[in-house]
Length: 436
Image (cartoon, one colour):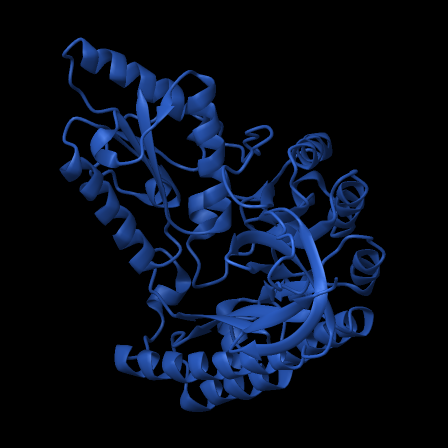
């Protein structure tokens, strides 16, 4: 078969698409550049917001419309929560991903014999939430590799559908994680981004605490060839002093942390079922900055959560400014049926839009301020691409940077690390003069 892949949603979804691509290739199938040329189109769907769910369904219909003869596979979170009314020949939710290649091959063989039927009947799977290990997964592009070590979430925030789509926490074995880290290092990747649906819950299903994650990170940090170790989203409640100290002891840890906030208002956080308040969040940030003085801090914030008043939103604005975030991912609240927040009093769409615009403007200002403070400092970038006499990539504290080389100098290649002095900034990006 010729197989086309389309990924919607988060980095974990992209990792799982890369894994599925490898599985198809290992079975002798080929990649298609366009859905029109494909015998099978795999859409890895997202359900984190109602808009993501709508787009997932739209893309499934689009695949079928562009190529009526293709086998359309609905995979991932939206497929897990669907009522079955989607334009797909195969529905494979988050617990059935390892069945996709077999089911697609079976349906392709049947169609080759002019037997046309849909494969909506989903295979029996274990009721227990187990980690589905894809083995070592190699990203087809880029110099930074994502490594998934955990799936699922036990938190049940009142706005979130993910625990219902992904299931409860399931952790990958230490041995499998180390094997993949070694594989990635041997393949030339110098930076690994350790990710998961609820990363700080790694090991929880085995009765372990946050130091289980710290222990795994230490093992990965010691893999020869890895020069940068970066973490996905972290939870404030899990950032104990012991864990922060463990992070500071790692040789290759990047001083860039995504600490999920969601709201700067304590009353909103309580309605969200987030289990921390703004004071507790600020104390964790203070502790992190004490150990990582040059760190960048990024976060997620939801605006227009049910019942959010003007004063609660202003509390969020003030808190975000006080924290000095280098980057804020802003999300207007999206109603998800089946969650507790869906039953609460909703904020009018026009108010959500106004608040989103204000917070985005603040986020832009904060990003520019952070980049501006880097002028005159020594930084390094992991080169991702070159163009003319310029090389671009990210610094260790996750700022987009461009290194400008004088004529006649040898340009680096993607994967190289370039060190130099920051000469200026433009918005959230910086310019680097390379060391000779």
